[in-house]
Length: 165
Image 1: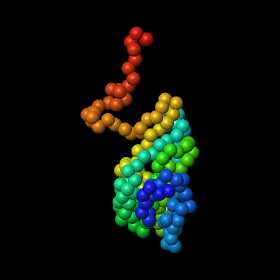
Image 2: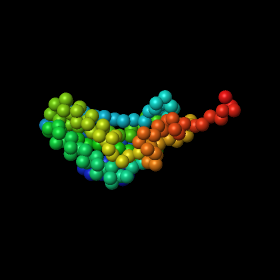
Image 3: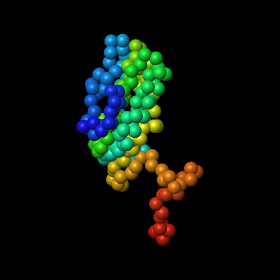
Image 4: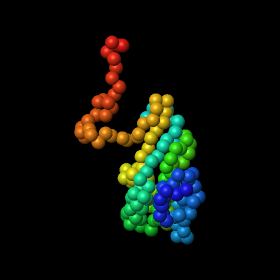
């Protein structure tokens, strides 16, 4: 099932296909196709991860992914770029995102593919919630009520009972 898509970008709830992603950018003049596959790992920042949940504002996510794709295609000549991101609950090892780029030569294909994943992670409204032994945690979440200089790790750390020390 597709939540939102264009010819080149997609946000979907079902499993992702590397072959389908590659087919989006393959053409006769493409001497190289670079592929980035992001998967759910079992540890993040030293903490066990049992699964991830991705949520998205799907139509906005696709619109931004398409803007990024067009930017990259204008910056890196003769490239075609595509990206597919999965949402929903994913187990360790499942594919969460695929970015692909084709170009006449490998350097441009690698560059365009790297730009796509880097910009996607920075700008696209897709949110990640990790699950592990300590419970769920929204990755990268910051309380909008806090001042920019606020230290979330320090100021929101669990308080220890001084009598238990």
